[in-house]
Length: 385
Ligand SMILES: Cc1ncc(COP(=O)(O)O)c(C=O)c1O
Image 1 (cartoon, rainbow, N blue to C red):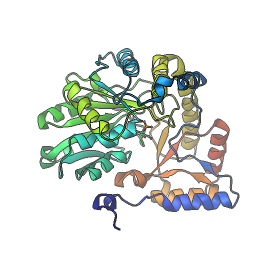
Image 2 (tube, helix red, strand yellow):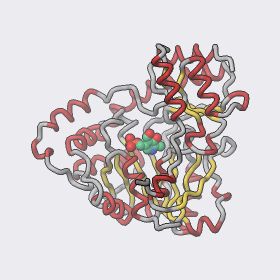
Image 3 (cartoon, rainbow, N blue to C red):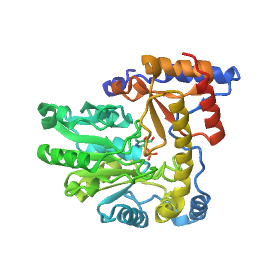
Image 4 (spheres, helix red, strand yellow):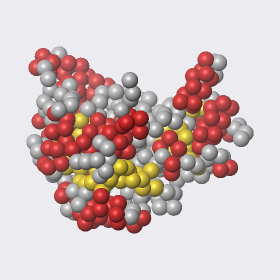
């Protein structure tokens, strides 16, 4: 039996060697500190868990959920979007619940991509964007995110023949892995280009509430964006709910209905008890989120200061819980991460794992407590390369 050509096209998992080394170190009894995973270590706030517990008892929730999400959940999404960005979306026709934003991001291209259509994907990036192209026999075209351009793609470098074949551009701000945020001018340029060449702007806003200074903007704050854009939101990082699997997408009725058509033929929606907890979280976002963000802000400030002292080069991020740092002495990202694990028992992620333009960088996820972070900084100060 052979794997499909599509599955064979998926590049080998780059972290195999690092994972093997990490497990070896743990077996040897090394106290490994894992700054690799983008998964908050903080438990979901108690009040959200309590809502879910009560919702579990509701027998009407034990049946299939609504495919597109219960109206009460979609209304909570619409109200949050209105409060935060001042934009109105019709909860009945312009919002859909997702089983985590990853699910929506992976399925969305099925609605629009024919073989050989182009999907513009940032590089480095969350891998699901280009995997969506592979799964639909589309063609990913990579847009480098460089230090010099503040980790925004340079739209003028995309060849015209590519733009003419483009159906979707993926953007993600605040950005994983670089921590960058987008400017209004940049979003405006993208919307203009999308209208000119008739393609969809798919914006992944999974980290839009994890910010430390200026609030990041929604793509819909650009006039006319609703004609061409869809935006993916997630409750995972905002409320430390990665395990619950809940997110949502907003956009015009055509784009949302297209995604709904794909999804209704694949999944059967989000468990209604989880939607009730999600609605509560969104309705109480301004009360719940600041104390969570404060924890990550303190960690960011602490580690940024320590890394600066040690001479590491990076742009201090205004959002996300990632630090995107240049590897010292031009060492390759895989080599650096291997050495860090071998010599000081620290797991950080090699930039190459996010795409070719991630080479020369490594990513630190601020997903361990203060004491462990202090220990990590101390170990880094002893690192001899
Ligand atoms: C950039 C980005 N988008 C989307 C997701 C998916 O989040 P979820 O499916 O938990 O909503 C992640 C998760 O790490 C991410 O880093």
